Amino acid sequence: MTDRPTRERLVTDEVVASFADTPSPRLREVLQSLVRHLHGFAREVRLTESDWEQGIEFLTRAGHLTTDKRQEFILLSDVLGLSMLTVAINAAEDDRATEATVFGPFFVDGAPEVPLGGDIAHGAKGEPCYVDGVIRSTSGDSVPGARIDVWEADSDGFYDVQYEGDRSAGRGWLRSGAAGEYRFWSVLPSSYPIPHDGPVGDLLRAAERSPMRPAHLHFRVTAPGYRTLVTHIFVAGDPHLKDDAVFGVKDSLIVEATRYPAGTAPDGTGRDRPYYRMHFDIVLAPQEHRP
Image (cartoon, rainbow, N blue to C red; front, side, top):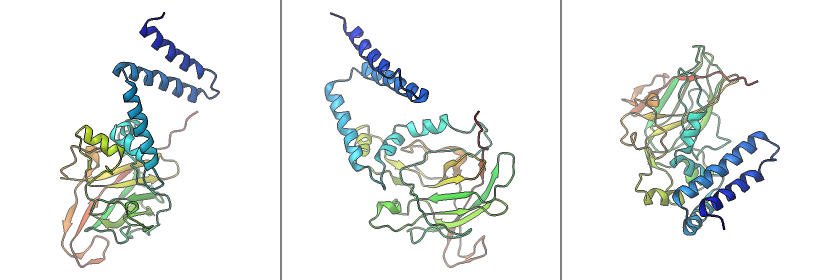
């Protein structure tokens, strides 16, 4: 009779070997490495059958909760730091490019287009905020016509998709102008807890970790010839900058939100109430051409 370590190794070897004839070299590499590391994890923690059952139940609950408006598995990836690790692995090598951060679970296809200088709030709760900047390449050239998708939570900490109905608010997309400039109105970003009424929330409570995210605005910027950039801008001074539940904060993405009295705004429009302004220039890295 073989000893325990040998029995365990033979199981792993057999499963790894079962993928040896996978036609795709990349899929074969990923699956075999996944098996080795997954089995290594089980051996390291001496996984019990009860542990395994709880893990399966956790993943099953995450699957049942996931819809086209809520992605519990992305949330799980975020709180385990896997999302940010993937971002770091795939980041542009040029340190002049704007830093990327997590995509998050609340992006929605089909957001409304707004004109340059338009308002993406569409009735979202919050104090008015004017956001502007210039999109450039790492060589300093302006990037006209870039598509800029933006989305954020309202002052209550909820995204539009977390409400009943199909209203689009705090979300939209626009194109940069001839000199690469962009500008739009929205509401001042607010801090909020990530959805914690499901299995990911249970995990955070069990670990006594905070579910909070600091106030931020999401960007996804695309332009021909450039790498797609997914990033945030964070509001300077937010108390949760140091304990972001998804590890997404980077110093270069922290921006002052300056408050102005009612009057003429930077775009020449008259404002009958105080508003904020956040200025943030975006630098895109060139698309890498692989042989």
